[in-house]
Amino acid sequence: MTASDHGAGPDAEHTVLSVLRGAEGWLTRAGVDGPKRSAELLLGKVLGLSRLQLYLAHDRPLDPAERTAMRTLVARRGKGEPVAYLLGTWSFRGHEVAVGPSVLIPRPETEELVEHALAALPANAVAIDLGTGSGAIAIALAVARPDLRVLAVDISEAALGIASANVARHGVGERVQLLRGSWWEPVPADATFDLVISNPPYIDPVRPTGLAADVQAFEPALALFSAPGDVASCYRAIFAPLASRLRAGGAVWCETGLGAAAPALQALRATGLVDVELRCDLAGAERFLCARQRAEPTQGA
Image (cartoon, rainbow, N blue to C red; front, side):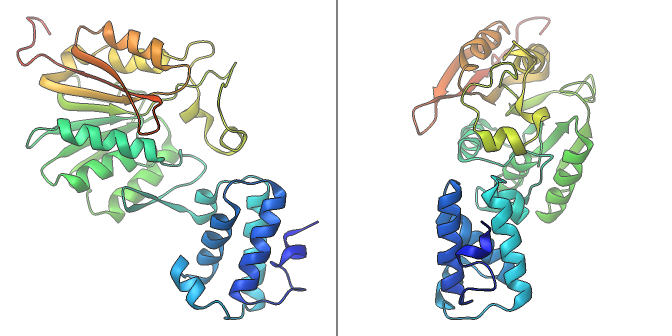
């Protein structure tokens, strides 16, 4: 059975509407999430049309090249490949960012993380995004706050290539600097920040509780998995120097998830920062870690 058997191939009536219906039916039977939305997004990519434009052009015929392109994308989606990777871009806080298999796909919870962080920023602040991936967080911060400067760090050369393209796409290259390295390693020793933000790996590769099969199959292990048996490993690396890296009154905001929230919170409490919290996301899941440097840092901090 192939995608062509259900409206995406040469034996069906090849209008926008018929191809959408056929692709949706085939993807439903393939068991993918959001089959209708997937079909709309994929056909929109092939034809260069928005969702609304697709339905306004419901009787538009597809030529053979368009049908082949759609059939290929639908077949890949049927095997679980994320729509975002098939499209090559994804929306984050209303901004399109390039994505690919070397970076995580930005998610709504991370949009919430950015909202929280923005509320904590003073004027003319300096922020650091550790494990920037596609650069979505750093770019969203810079776009929202034209007075902000951001240092964005990632260990992956491929991820930084995507982040660099996204920084250029959104015109924030003068205020977002990319560095390659592991967590704080490439950051100048004397650099301090008003905000430290991160969505680090927190899934145990030995017991990947709650990890969707398509995420595990297609998204980068480097951005997903902690050290084996130690879901707080990346948090400790991020938190260890916070007392000396955060400016007076500065804040740290990190995303967390199932199985990692409690040990990550414990690691944050060990820093000596104040106002340490674990907050829930809009769905009620324990999701965001935050803390603040004292307005007047303790001597030696």
